[in-house]
Image (cartoon, rainbow, N blue to C red):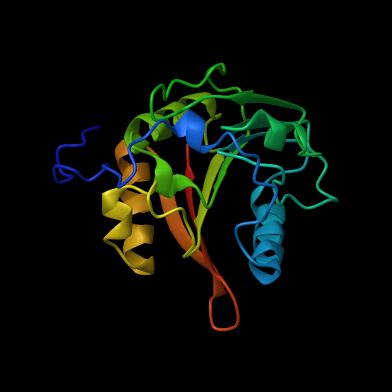
Length: 205
């Protein structure tokens, strides 16, 4: 694994202020529209096996998991405990700034699936985080990384802001490949013609 192929400043941001302070206000809103949410919920229903233990990385007050998908556990990670505490699908949660500490406080091979919904653009150490996600996933478990065209632009890394939707898929694919994921595929869940676009990139641990 190496970050040498990325240009200098690729993971810089317009706003380099403390992320902990930025995320102090609880944002109990959704960051994609209802159509995109429905598409993601349906996709999760096909990608995640019932009874799984799921890691919801960079989560919020909602996980977009299907209501009828029975799961053994959902571990939520985020930057705001109020948001995580309001999420009814989470069975446990923890707050951690992955840009300062990408090491996840979870055992190796302990999760059956991992999710990262419309937040990957904020990672300044994406390769380290993706390696950690692969470590905590069981063999052949899916990592579903979804993205749209919305973000907090001052907190998104430079390389993300420089790319279009297709480029974003290629970038996530590269993160996954460098971190050791296999069978990586991009799925267009909403084309954006009548609402928010949404793409999910899936890699297998």
